[in-house]
Image 1 (spheres, one colour):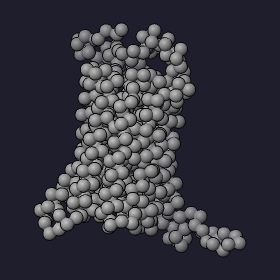
Image 2 (cartoon, rainbow, N blue to C red):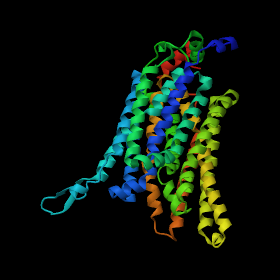
Image 3 (cartoon, rainbow, N blue to C red):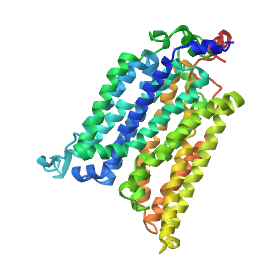
Image 4 (cartoon, helix red, strand yellow):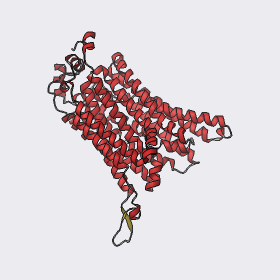
Length: 486
């Protein structure tokens, strides 16, 4: 059993680990700025490139699909060669394709694309055009960005003691959400100077600069960093188990774990509900709440801002709850409660939207304003509630993944992000269904997101963060005898 460090020893420790936290938080913010930027300039891109809403659904989905498919390979690679090299590769690749997003042209000089006439049928088919090029670029963008958070989780496992993981994950996701929240404003401001194409190029250049300085400063483990003294090293390694050679990952044990699959189901439903905020929320605010200009910009960024606050508070709370309830319920009760409340708030937004579009709001200006404000607030609080469990999700991956937390995080994120391309198609499909007017369609979309959150809440009740799921039974027992596992 490791003895707690004295206050004197903690005071003598260097603070390099907080520099690591600053680097990964800036990375998280940059990730969401680049990811969310496209929704802010969607009307301009559609107008210049001649794209429909249906085509943009494929563009959104291309990123989400590639991001999901390459999570596990990138997380596994980080476990094998360390997160430093993998994160540098990830940020460079996504920065390149961020810049290339702004360089997609409309093929006007080729009569709207490269076309061929199919033999025998005489049918003319599009072989290549702006739509296909943009889908390809966004797919490669998603491929490049895949693995960022699993490798950050792997780095946090090496750089932070167990009792600070929740808070570290909370701060990480706070900056990510705030990056998404300020992205619409940043894109608008930069676009006014250099156009929407120049904005993508600008963000790409910022990412490349980040890579250079990160790679020069960061190290995979505290033992490799020259700025870490003995006191900080002892503080970090306390409770992290053995620093010696650990057994290999057992894929059989991993894939047979009910906790892994429940965690994945929870996360796929979580992303299916939440991705509304990074894809079609602007269309909802415009068409149903009739927002525009500054009001629209604030409304589209507000849910992510609220979510950022919740990430920090949730990370702060989960570390304390674990000390009181243990990992089994200190993690899972917070996750279940957060998603349950988030689902109810989505359903409340549906009710408010229905009232706003109904006879109750007719001819009452103050009532329209009030219902509009409450609908936006309900969605902000739904985002807040969901993100209150974000640190819990990723801390659980570190808990059950141990040395292979990058692989476990990548697996959860891979399966979970399959919910994003599903929602990219589901929301516009629901919005286009025949019914009693446009209002009912958007209401169904809100119900869809709410139901996804409620399923996530149910999953949390059966997830067990106490069980390390990456080692064969014999290896796990040996590690427990050696004190490398609790």
